[in-house]
Image (tube, rainbow, N blue to C red; front, top):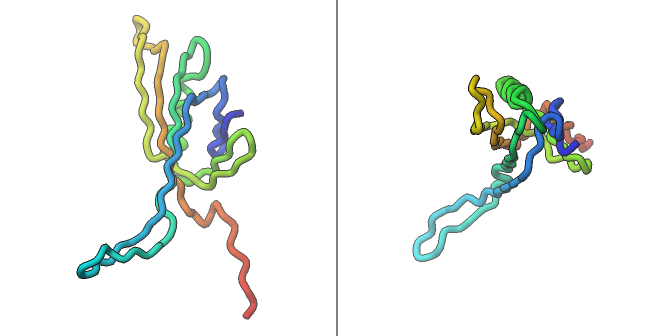
Length: 137
């Protein structure tokens, strides 16, 4: 297993990605000041985005059905836990974009090669996280 997104497992038989890119942002809101640079205040974490890209070669590895399964999971609109094969828990993510390019086509239109790219965006959905302990004051 390379990674699991909810119930979907990325692997050679299902869908193997070749590249993982991660971009994390933090919010520092600006307040204008006269004669000086804007003052900045940290207001919390920003977007955490992961892009997975790879190649499906149905004759060798992966299948169109795996892409369709992920598309159906994205249609639900619910955050899913994202965990890699080494046990790192990334948090709750949703699929915000899926791109696929089919080429090297058979006479019936079936693709020998499908390139894909998924964009996953982190969400702070309370249903996916445990509540913080309450202090007794």
